[in-house]
Length: 448
RNA sequence: GUGGAUAUAGCGUAGUUGGUUAACGCGUCAGAUUGUGGUUCUGAAGACCGUCGGUUCGAAUCCGACUAUCCACCCCA
Image (tube, rainbow, N blue to C red; front, side):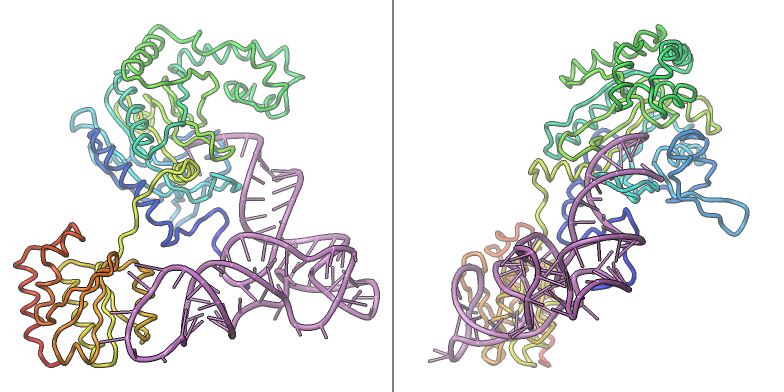
């Protein structure tokens, strides 16, 4: 088959069969965030391009080659958001939320866009859950954020996602460290791979996570950032670790965790899964104490993380985690013949108005195919309405699980349908008043 | 941007050294005498074998180009 228009590279369709995976994750993620006192915020999918250049960093890969930027009718250029933090900080500032008292805690579930070459766990349109906290320097805040991420992963049923933790210090200690790195690598300059030679000039910290064996070998003897932290940063990091110990959260101090977004300071961390291929970072985040000021606000310390929803779902799948089951219809009404069909349509409507999920035949099938269909969609009850039923005004309500059939009067169908016995099966039955009212409505309609 | 792999019905696959109507499973639809599903049985629909070009009497099968997808590097969620 040759379909003319195909979905853009690096995008995905989420089909009905998979939608419960997303619903499950979205519910887990937002429920847990709310338990920790985070409130949802929604910001535009596109922002002024300058926002990302300023926040993410004008030398970062994301800004230099991965942004979807469009020019609008005026002079302004807009960019599809490549990540969530910048837009949130902008919105907080623009709406005066930095003046409402601290800490401010928000979360979001968003699509984000990056023009990269797709591979396992890496898409051009991907979805991210993120949280941001503003207005506290306390290492307890860092710990709280990490605890939240861990709680979510736990809530999803994941056990083997490893926490990698590091501190990249404040701008002052980082400057010193960069110098030290340059001094260390300079004599090895010629042995380094090409990209690493560039890194040596631009961002020597990235040298540390080069995959090339030679660079790796050289890097193994390189100075470690933790030895260069100033007193304040070191204390902060030590305290964070001891709080995590109190919580019983396992972590591995990993000096290779550096993060590619320029705004990070001090704490950086990643939760890495071994089960989904090369792009194993399910969650990444840290502190960004300088960003709010960079975007024009007062200096406000801040921190947060982003969690890749596709990667989260992939990890859950590969670990055999459970997702919430799809809801199935409470009732299927199988009519036979035109008169019955009209009655069935009205009955279905009444059942729906009473708050239940009901379906009836829309394609004109025979009884047997209808039963098959009712079974396939997982209907909990089926009622057959044919000439006999219309004549006698009585039908049989069949419980599809047990096969049991209970006689019901059509005129009192809603009463019967919402009776205690049946509600037990549904667990979410309606009150008798509503059910009775609906039954009355049906009673009035005697034209059929 | 750089590498590697793959491209056959809605999905998952088989197609041997190129040879008449491209096979199977799942799914879909319809039947298996009287108005009742999940099992079983029978039947049907559904593919110009990614696209274009080449070799050949003849190509899903060989060659080339293109495109798409997947995986890895890079980077990150």
